[in-house]
Image 1: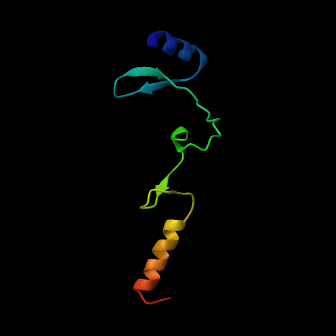
Image 2: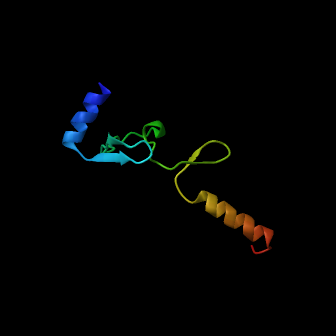
Length: 76
């Protein structure tokens, strides 16, 4: 079944040559169309975690580092 799927993919799309094994493999373009809010269904999304385990979207870590740096060097 894998060989058949690979042969069909070679006919439809572009092939990918693996120099290490010396074989050609089928290459597919996958488009993400899932708009759900589950992070398990969005593996392409970069996740950052606080130490309490909550998800952070932006630069909270940078702001915290900046605050620590200011406090450390006495600039408040």
